[in-house]
Length: 282
Image 1 (cartoon, one colour):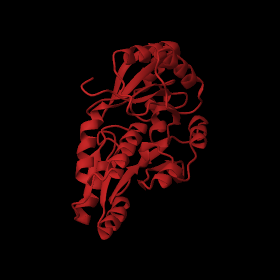
Image 2 (cartoon, one colour):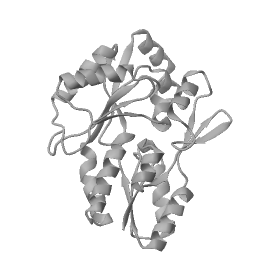
Image 3 (cartoon, rainbow, N blue to C red):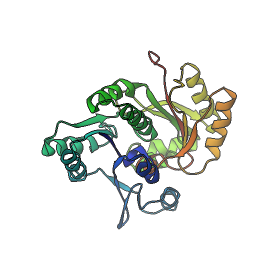
């Protein structure tokens, strides 16, 4: 039997994880003196309310090797295989923790896939892996398919504020102040190298929506995979974005809320799209 494991940066809700039988390793979020288990005891709107109400800036802690090892040992004892689809190694040490745990478990039936991405792009990959497992494919073959797929699974998003990039140390305070004064809405993605990349700097949300729409015009989306609109906190911007997508003939499968691991850095009123490009299309 092939099992699937994800970490909480995938933003898959815990009830869906249980329903699908995925194994799950959470990130720890610390706000002030209190620590929370992302996806388990930290409700998303409650998190964003704490984030925006002037509480201490959240700190995220990658899962320990022990968190993975507990799952790996059980998989080994059962003689099953496990495909782990994890947050980009360029954004976190989560993959390194998993690789260390695998070396301790000393079991060849564990496959670590560095997604080189984040949030619901990992969900797309996990659901695809589960589909392949249901068809009887081996763990090694599934991992190979995911390696081939991951450069086609894309996320593009517009941020409503630069405040949280600055608080998280990813932007200087001066740049954030200038950007806020100019009403700059950066459009970001995760590059094929697994890093955060800036595609554009738009003045106002309407320009950001138009920028993303124009970017998507040059692409061919693979209809075999779902298309997810995503938002952080507050759906107004996302709803306007979906209206533009519909006018351009892009059908959204579902609207999904970003969780705390990624939401810490992008802040409220962010919006974007998860999609898969057709093969041989950039």
